[in-house]
Length: 77
Image 1 (cartoon, one colour):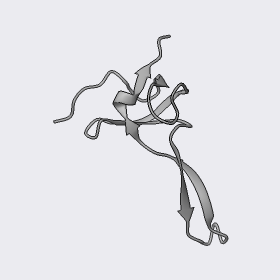
Image 2: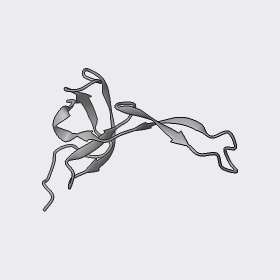
Image 3: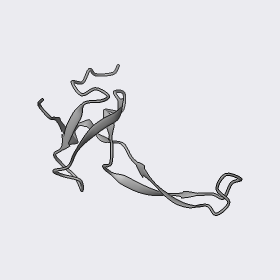
């Protein structure tokens, strides 16, 4: 059973733990079953991209990764 959280998609949050501690951002997605959130511009990871017709070079792209909901705090206002 999923637990109900006060943090919703579109809320402004502050990172209170981890590498991005002190940053603020907007919640892009919430995963209640895993108790995780994705915050815009935080916890970025480089992902390899295979060459395709649209992108014949391939290369790397940066992607936001989920973080535990306990590491973020809702910003008032």
